[in-house]
Image (tube, rainbow, N blue to C red; front, side, top):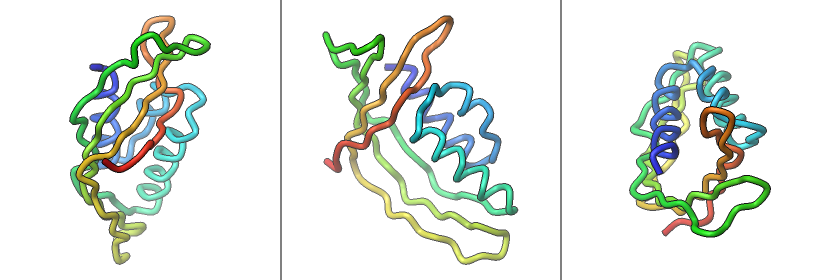
Length: 126
């Protein structure tokens, strides 16, 4: 699904720029989205940075015939590249190992003019 690819690309873009407004705008009551944006705000707020290639969507498909309270579920396989988080300009980075493939379900709602993410659930490493 194109919106999931767009949102993941936005996470990657924001991770390198530190401006989370658009990321937050495309989420609705999404705890995982807020946690990602909060981390980025905290790192860039102290002069730090995030490096690495981020997430790459290998596949994404809407789960057919399953909808709950207007929520659409998108099952995806995501490659997670290794990343380094520098909390301050001079700090030693925290290293996060990548994953070759991870099963991630995005919960989405549409309205009134665009999709919004309501949850990101990491199901398993594949």
